[in-house]
Image 1: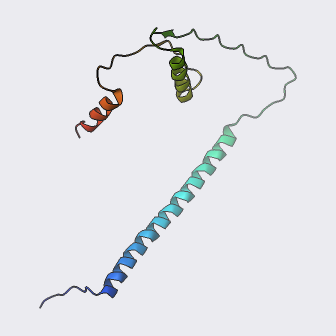
Image 2: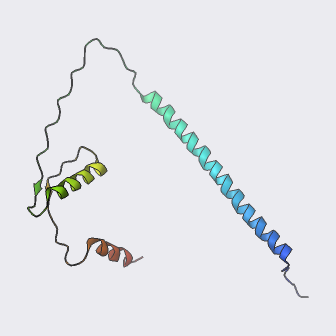
Image 3: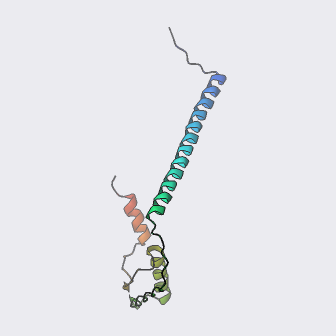
Length: 129
């Protein structure tokens, strides 16, 4: 007795459509589940923030203003670094870390003959698994 697989175009088309339909149905179900989970978590977080928020009390006396923090000393800059580069480096650090950062020094680092981006790529691509 030999078993012959059905290779008719109608069977193949039915199988492909059924497989794709199953995959898309599961993806749609997952999307709905994740959306519902996100809404549930955001409602729980907003509910917990309302309970923790202290109530504002009216006071007759004005609250004194806090004194501004003293300005940070200017960073020690290597003479070969231009002021524009110092400003760009400072702006990038403040943008990524926040306004409470103190920069103490900026200096050039000798990286040898290789570009630092190329060295990082080589290190990443030759890293053992």
